[in-house]
View 1 (cartoon, rainbow, N blue to C red):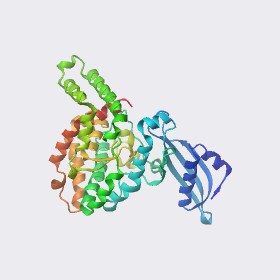
View 2: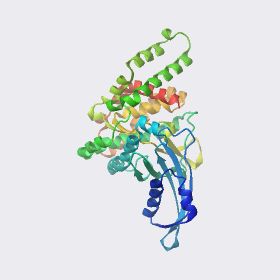
View 3: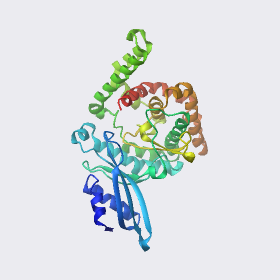
View 4: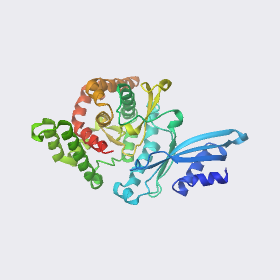
Length: 369
C-alpha cells in the first residue's frame, strides 16, 4: 500500500515499528490502497497510563476506484517503563485482554447479540511491544463522564443493563453449549486474585485498605473504637488479601460468569440522546485486562461501590439492584430460561452481601486514583 512520506513520519509517533506496521495492516484489511494523511495523538492524559499507554490514530486515504476513506482507531500499548511492566506482569494483562476480544466476545455474542465492547481489529502479544487496536468510540460520540462528580441514576441504569447482558450471556452459553463455556475458562485468567498473583497485588491491596481506613476516619471523625463502621473495617483489613481473594474465587460453579473485572467510571464511555448530558442512551466498557470468571455480583458490587454519586447509591440501592435484575431476567426469558432458578433476585442479594468486602476494598483502590 502506498504511504506518503509525511504519513511515515506521523506513524513514527507510535511507540514501535511493529505497531506502526500493524496499523497499516488494519487499513489494508479495510481494503485501502493508499494512505494520504495520518494523525497520531495521545489518547489519555499524562500519568493515566499505569497499565497502558493510549494513542488515537486518524487516517484519510483511498479505496479502489479512488474512493475516499476515513478511519479512526485507538492503539493501546504496554507502558514504556520496564519496572512497571515487570511488577504488574503487564504482558499477561495484555494477553488476558487479547483473549477476551479474540475468544470470549465471539462466544458470548453468538446467542445474545452484541455486547458493550468496542470493535477489535488486531493485537500484538509478544511480551515487549504488546498492543491492541480498537475502534475509536469517540468518533461515534461516546465520551467519558466526570469521575469526580459521580454517576446519577440514569447513567447507573444504563451501565447495569449492559452488565446484565454481559452476565446473562454466560448463562445462555452454558445452557446452549456448556462445553463452549468450559473452553473459555483457561482463556480468562484472574490477574488480581488468583493465588499466583498474590506477589504482585497483596501489597497493592494492603495500601487500598489503608486508604479506605483513612477516608473512613476523615468522614466519621472521633474515636475509632466508638464507631461501628471503622471497627468493622479494621476487622476486615486484619483478614486482608487472602480473605478477599477467597471470596472472589469461592463462587459456586453454577453462578460463575465472565465478568468485566474493573467496571468503574473511567472505564465507561457514554453516548447521549440529542447530546443531552442527563440522557445517556448507550454505554461501552473499556479495559478488559482484569476480566475474570466469578459471580455476577463482583461486577455489580465493584461498580456500585466506586462510581455512583453518594446520594444516588444511598437513595436508590434497591432500585438499582432491581433494575439490574430486571434487565438480566429479560434476556434469559428471551431464551426461555427461568431467572428465578438460575440467578434469582434473592440470590443476587446474598451474593452482594458476600462480595461487599471486595467492593469496599475496590473503592479503596480507586480513592487513590
